[in-house]
Each structure stands twice: as structure tokens, then as C-alpha cells.
Length: 340
View 1 (cartoon, one colour):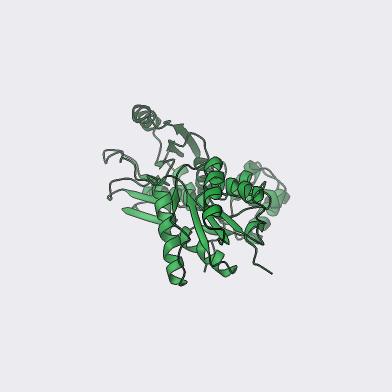
View 2 (view 1 turned 90 degrees about the vertical axis):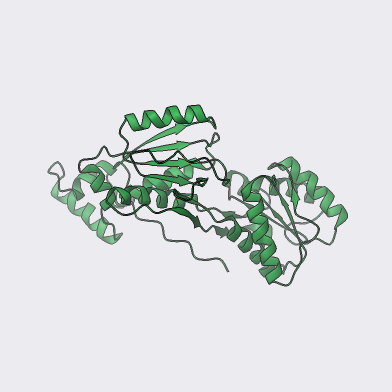
């Protein structure tokens, strides 16, 4: 059964929106500055109390004698994963409180070292290193004078702190949802076997099937993370195993391809065939017909957690080591609704 995701932290932007003022005005009002009218200040204070908002102590500590900057070093060329992680990190310390320097290493080690030196020259207070996949990446080492947290792609050094999606749990809750919808003949089409995300999601899916007393239809089908692979794989699968009543796909791109082939073969989704993806990439899931059920990796929460750990370390809280996992959440749409 899917766990309830943690509630989103209230930010200064929320307070400003409720009070009908700018973020800058809300900040001045809550910090007691005299450039704000008494009536406006009271409106902001009332809004903060209504939302149970309290100024983030991490942000305040940064502004007291530190540079108030953090470096976010990424190799995610498309921005598919780094943008929600960045948004979550910004939420952790409140809008307008901390500046984030975003640097794209483009998957190049030399460029990454160049950006790292540039960020340290700017005297950033901490670093968040974001990978483009969940496979372990090389550690930056332990000579860096600021706290470092690895997000999405874990460090290959267990003495570093890494925060990454729990893809095994994601595969498990995906199958649990399909079984709850009455599906018993489930197949799995996914991406490249070399990717940890593909293997981990398959592991969780197989474990959930075993718990339910079911077996996967055929073998796990590994190949590209693409709509074309989804179309081709679905054509092979549904020809060999026409009894299939659900296809769990390793990504939303693959799921879109499966939907195309199901339509070509006159398999009605979801009545005849349930189709489900991963990543909850809304440009794909909400524009599919029917809209795609998917597993959201909770990347904003992941980014928020990474930022909180970085800045807590600045207040002498031990950063920690090893890999911590963030559970995803099930987003149900029309492609898997229960049979009538």
C-alpha cells in the first residue's frame, strides 16, 4: 500500500500570496524592518499564523555571517530531473533567502572540476551534486571545505551522504496498484539493463508479484528508454501473450509507445489492458489518451531534503554518510482504472 507523502513545507511565497504582497515585502514584514506599513505588516503576520509558517532557521543562520549561496552541480543535460530538485532545494530555505548557482557539467569530468573550483572561489556555503541517472557516480573527494550532498545519483564512496529515489519501492507499489485494479497477467517493458533504475524497478515489481502469488508474463523486456521501444516491445508482447491484461512500463516514454501499439491492435485501455509508467513526466502523462498512471519520484522532496542536510551541517549538525532513499508516490489516472 502506498505511503502518504510528506506535506509540502510552507514557504515565504505562500505567505506573500495569502497576504497579497510581494515576497520582498513579506520578508521585510516578518523581519521587523521599518519600511513596511503597520497594516501591511499585520496582514503578513496574520497570513503567517494562518499557514503556521515560521522563518526557516537554516536560512537565518546562512544570512548571519555566511555568503548565503549554494552551488548545485549537475550533469542532467535535459533538466528533466535537476529542475524539480532545484525547486525543492529553494523551497527548503525560502524564496529570496539564498542564491543558488546552477552549473551544468554536461557529463564531462574536466568541466565538472572547473565548475567546482569556480563555485568554491565564490565561497558557496555548500554543494548539492545532482546526477542524471540513479547509478553511482565518482565522489568529488573529501578535500572540499564545505558540506556536500549527492542527490539522485549516489556517490560511489559510502562515506559521502547521498539521497536518491527508492526505485525498488517504486516497482513494488506499481504492481500493488495493478493487482488492486484486478490485473493478474502483468508484463514489464523497461529501459536499458545497464541502468540501476531499470533493474531496481524490475526487482520491486517481481517481489510484489511474488507476494501476490502471481508470476510475470514472459521475461522483463529491457532496451531503450523510448516510445519506439515501447511500440515495438508491445507488438512482440501482445502477439506472443495476448492474455496480458496489464503492462508496467519502466518510463512514461515507453508507456506512450505501448499505448500506440495497443490502439493499433484494438486493445482498449484501460478496460482490456492497463498501462502504467514511471517518472510522472506530466508533459507525457497528461497528454496521453487516456492519461497515464505513473509513479512520481518525489524529486522536489528529494531536493528539499538535500538542501536541509547541507545547511544543517553548517550549524554543526552531523552530515551523515551512506545512501538515504526517498519513496515515490502513486499518481492514478485513466490508464489503469479498476475494471467494472
